[in-house]
Image 1 (tube, rainbow, N blue to C red):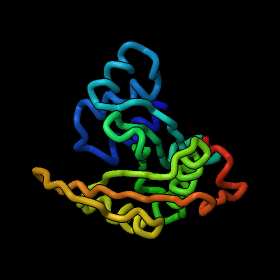
Image 2 (image 1 turned 135 degrees about the horizontal axis):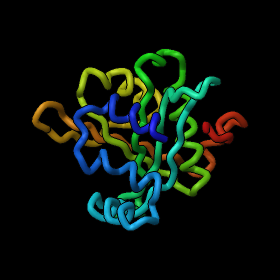
Image 3 (image 1 turned 60 degrees about the horizontal axis):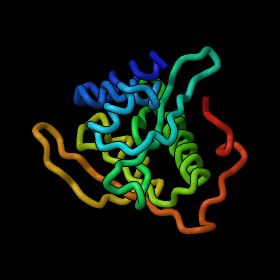
Image 4 (image 1 turned 90 degrees about the horizontal axis):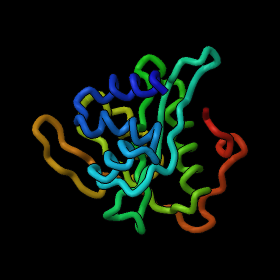
Length: 170
């Protein structure tokens, strides 16, 4: 888990302190610190967190699902979705997004949301999200980048995961 946390911090160097501390809530959601961090962040629950590792045990990517209190009845959010820059271009991002969708559908969710940014380091992620049907729904200007909010809805019976997608990544 430490390696996964290090990867996320290296891929998203400008994240807030609260987001950096969110790994406490991921590791121990029932602890007092985990519950407080989720409360301060407006998070209802952490649904899942997965780590993609290679045969040697090196962390190549991460993905997660969580619910915000404000829209918990509407959607589940994709979080901490990233691929190690040295492992990009090998299809890992596609496998991670398929795995994430599979986890959410198995948990009963049909609408997914995420946010990303106009940071040049996230250009490949933008293409991946577009390719997988995550439509841009809004933007919010920030100091250095603009947040891009995306959404994907899966209709009943539309998504049938393959055997590979049903298996856990970790």
